[in-house]
Image 1 (cartoon, rainbow, N blue to C red):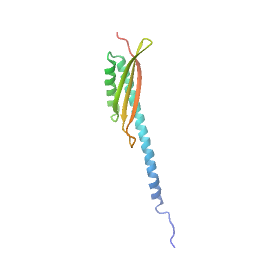
Image 2: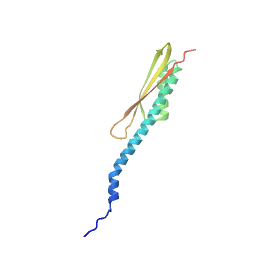
Image 3: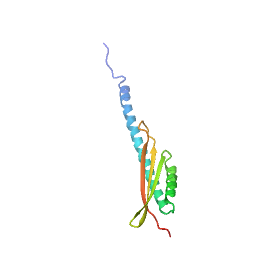
Image 4: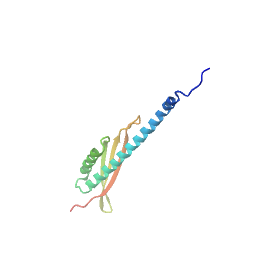
Length: 126
């Protein structure tokens, strides 16, 4: 009569748990990349709003500054749009910049869009 052993049980356990651990790892990496890019997008929007607030042509300056900041900080993100609006609140000019980028997904979900916005009070011309 043959004796039963536990030979091969470690391999079976590894084969069953490895896909789950790998999936969890990929989700954590995707969340970290998304958080990093979100931070960069908000930074680009605030830099663009600051630059636009001291410019006579806020739309062009905001677009250029947002592109420059994103190019320097995050090479993976693809800039979709930079929307700049000049608003007046209580007689004060305010520049609102919204930056939208697409980031690649690591799995079948495709790409995601992230938006960041910033406001800056426009300085009056001297």
